[in-house]
Length: 81
Image (cartoon, rainbow, N blue to C red; front, top):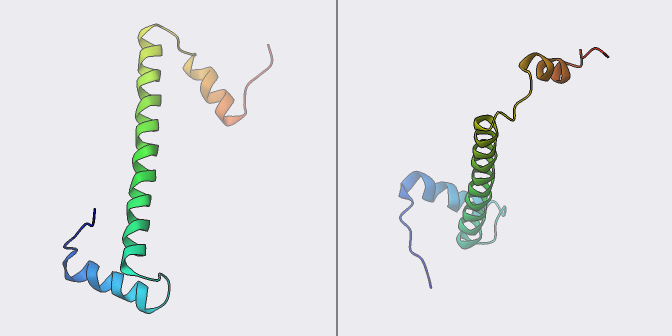
């Protein structure tokens, strides 16, 4: 199903320039690439939200590590015990 989109003057010029310079073969290519990028960003955002939810659930269950130990591990300053 074809989609018609009003991009506004500034974005329309930008898309036209991308096609004129040969970066993309058509306006449709530019828009498909834009939608793919949004799709990838949304997938990363969903993954991030899932990780945060998992972390919060683990914290609620008391499944946490000592903060000082975590920072020591991150900074590479952990001491052998």
